Each structure stands twice: as C-alpha cells, then as structure tokens.
Image (tube, rainbow, N blue to C red; front, top):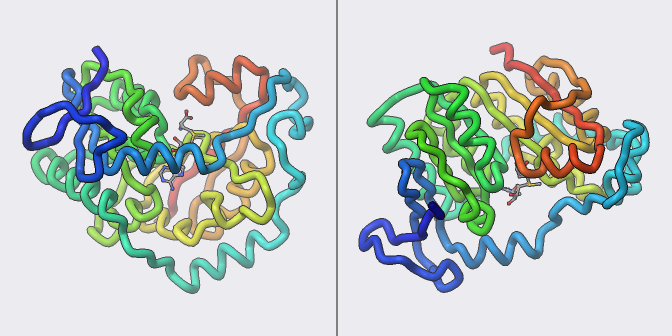
Length: 278
Ligand SMILES: C[S@@+](CC[C@H](N)C(=O)[O-])C[C@H]1O[C@@H](n2cnc3c(N)ncnc32)[C@H](O)[C@@H]1O
C-alpha cells in the first residue's frame, strides 16, 4: 500500500506541494516518515545535482569518464588541508526547523525504546533503511534524506524498527552529537558526488560537518560508483580517526535504487568500510 501523507494531528491527507508546515508521513505498516515543507524538498531535488550517469555500460574500473561527467580525475590536491581546517574550526550552522523537528521525533522514539542506532544518511527512498532494519532487528535504523519527494516513494516494509526522516544530514549529525547520541553504524550509500572540483566542499568528506562523524562514532560504510570520490573518502577518513579499507565489490543484491542502476549499467562499485577507533 502506498504511504499517505497526513498531518500528524488531524490525519487529513494533504497535498505535499501546498504543505508549508510540518507534515508527517505515516505508513500503514509501522514505519514512520517525518517530513517538512515538501514543496521545498521537491524544488531542491530539481535544483541540485542528481547524479548524471551516462547510459554507456562501463566495465573498465579506470574508465571513470564514462561513469560521471567530471574533469576531476584524481583526488583533490587540497583535501588534507581542507579536512584539517574543518577540524580546527568546528562547523556550526543553525539547524533548519525541519531538521530540528526530525531530530526531536527521533529523540522521542529513542527515549521510549532505546536501542543501538544505525544511521542511513542520504537514504533517498529509504530502500536501504528498510533492508538494514530487516538485517538488524535489535537496532533502530534511521534513514535521513532532505527530499520529501524521494521519501514519499518509500515502499513500506512490515517492520517497526525503522524511521525515515526528512532532514538535512549534516545538521542532523550535529544535533545527534550535541545530544551526546552515538551510532553503532553509519551507512552512507551513493551520496551526491558533486563532480566538479570546485564543489569539493559539498562532498561528504570535504564538508565542514565531516569531523562531526567522529563524534557519532561506530562503523561506517560508504559506497560510490566514482573511484575519485572513493579514494578521497579513504584519504580523508583517517584524518578524523576513521580507519578502514577501500575495495571494489559486487553486491549480491542491490541495497538501493542507485546501486541497482549502477549495476545494471555495468559500473564498477567502490566501498569503504571502517570504524572509529575512539
Ligand atoms: C544519489 S541519491 C542516493 C540515494 C540513495 N542512497 C540511493 O543510493 O539510492 C543522493 C540522495 O541524497 C539526498 N541529499 C543530498 N544532499 C543532502 C543533504 N544535505 N541532506 C540530506 N539528504 C541529502 C538527495 O535528496 C538524494 O536522495
């Protein structure tokens, strides 16, 4: 059954594009999606980069020009300096209202039923969130994406240990860290690559919020189809105390829709798996 958007108080269906206030998306099978200002999310989804994958199959892992339109063929030369600057000058940004609301929804749920937290940042439609919830039944799995449009495409699973939240990932991490919450594991699957070198600071590891991940702790798995992004992440990780390994891999089954798309197109896939040592 398709989840329906309802206001949390009235349970009346609303039009996502006219919703300017807090809306919650409650699926009938238990998974809870919390959303805010859906129209803005949709506009952002259109305005922002959304993975320009070419239609050509790509079988040679080194043939990255076929995977993604970019002039950046090697890791960004200023990577170390930028990450270190971000560590020295801790990132601060006012938390958007929707992210604060989403965080409070998580906190309430967590306080009622404390369990190990698994974070699925940039979860898109939440396919991976539901899969992780099935794989880790004792955990509370939290999928976070800023796009209400993507979240409304979630296919609800008959599980009650996951939560989908419309939130800005970076400020959400900050909220968790400030509240002293840590995670058992953090999945970051196919985040937007921001392929121009000038967009480096928008990439997960180039972002000012990257050091906040260290405060959340736990195990981290990042997946991408762009080798430069993967190499950059693997270089940046130990700078914030995240030790792990980078490898190409072939998934047995796809965890996300983007993973499925990339597999169908024959792209090589990379994953970094590591753990914070603190
Ligand atoms: C390439 S898609 C990947 C989605 C999903 N992980 C998958 O593999 O199918 C990237 C997702 O990140 C979301 N996103 C981009 N920037 C974000 C941010 N700052 N906070 C939260 N979500 C963000 C987008 O809305 C989009 O759904």
